[in-house]
Image (tube, rainbow, N blue to C red; front, side, top):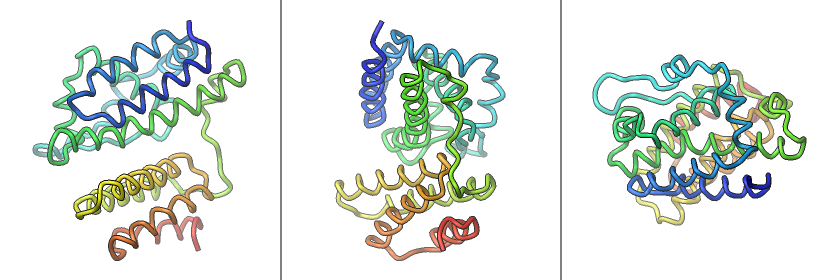
Length: 247
């Protein structure tokens, strides 16, 4: 068995490789990740705890919402951290075992314009939140000799966004982001935008008002550099002001 820190380092390496992968290479990257976590007592404990009494069918039906017509489905990330980990781990396990047709999953719920772009969409909406929640949990478990119930709880900030507005902001943020990606932007600049978008979105899931404010400002100013604020972004600002995140 691996040491706790070695297990965490391996997970970071393999999940980051999977997130940055192309669709064509994702199968091997996913296999590497699943092999790594299967040999770690730390990760086995976490996933066993999260999936115990987990209603996969119900969670999947709530998160993966079918749309009318080709490519019109959507993925709604569960707000509960424990459910996020259980659902995404289960989906990844089934993709790796060929029990889920990954191509059809991408086409139905993450389609953008081609398989690589659709995979990138999947990576940002599914893999990145999974990475963040798992690492937060296992790092706390490693420090405390693991007490999963405590490590899965969300940190509570002084200010946060109510659940209904949170869903609206995330939807608006995704719309703004995909519009921006259609612009002709240098690859290195586009990579910076992706990082700031991910940081802003992750801060919303974490729920800490001060982190949300700082992440929002970073994303706002990169948006202003490339285009004028549009109705979508003004709506995000309005919702953040309503929740007293910004003034």
